[in-house]
Image (cartoon, rainbow over all chains, first blue to last red; front, side, top):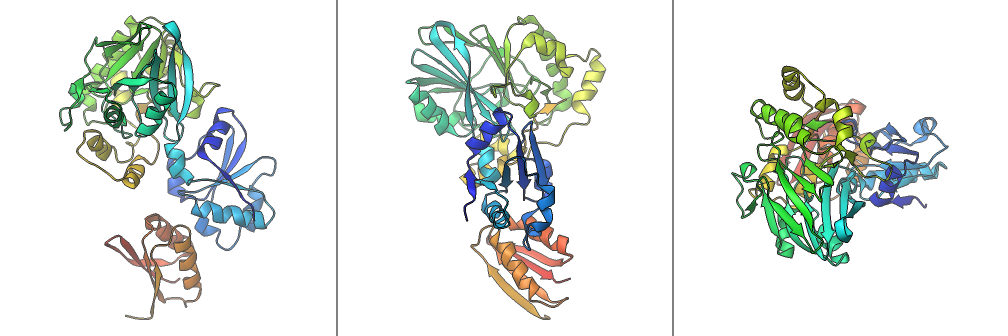
Length: 375
Length: 75
């Protein structure tokens, strides 16, 4: 009985290449409706594995035969069982190694572009969670921004590029995922920066990320400049990289804008969000390429899998940047907000250093989509 | 306590707790009770969902020191 095993990396490649795929997701209906593997050309059937214990014959007519079939479950056990059952009745099927647990943690590094004097900018796309992290490399030095919790991946990536990580930034105190920033700084001797306004309850040492802070990387003269841009949180800070890229954190996304309520103060921060998006960002040049800290839907991915778009285009196309009436803007971003991310209060505590969950507990906390935006 | 059968599925990973539970349930008569002991946290959502799909009733559910105990009445 040979059922194929696919890794999360192989599935990620199919998402990026826009391949066709049929996914039989054998998790609970609730789990499937909440969160699944998204692909532009993926089709789905959700039947919990425990409804298939007597056999899979009944569902065969619902599975198309003209494309590959992947069985997915939470960890992998049930998907192996179901893939084998399918194999026994003559339907070739693969299963996802490590299940959704592994999908949630997979990171795909994508080069965004070259910088002045031979520098490089990379985006790390966490497809299963919609998180985006960044690394700027030049002349043997590296800066990391909004790193997710897999510190080793960033440390090893810099090592492979013969670069020493000197600065680690978080644009704000994250509520949807656990930051790897502090661990990276500890492992490499880099300095870890957080906006102090978000960090009143933080229990470890950090440097204050302030408006106008400027860091030069390497001898190449690449500037990383901080721009205070509150609204998602009171401390939220953006970065302009090499006068070409704008890292917006959770303030501005490709097809949506940041939500102001995850630290509990939607009403207070909606005004900040408005002035960041409608005043501060408008003073910047339109040709900056926006690089957000999240994407919400696969339609936001470019052909190479990256998530990036010209600021001027977003001013024209992003609905959240085109609500002229202030009152309507206030209502849009404070009423009818989507559900909050899974365990967001606990995740904030972890990022403050107050909670120290085990590896498995961290996985549990981060299950599900990020939900940092409002459309 | 009326006829209660106990199934020890501790230490088993998904899908085995449900596979064993189903097998044990198949051997019972309608109205009899199966008490399942599991440590796989995935069972927390899966056993009630499975029972619900089959019309079985969870009459008691508890957790002691990481062990989940379900008392399920056969439909």
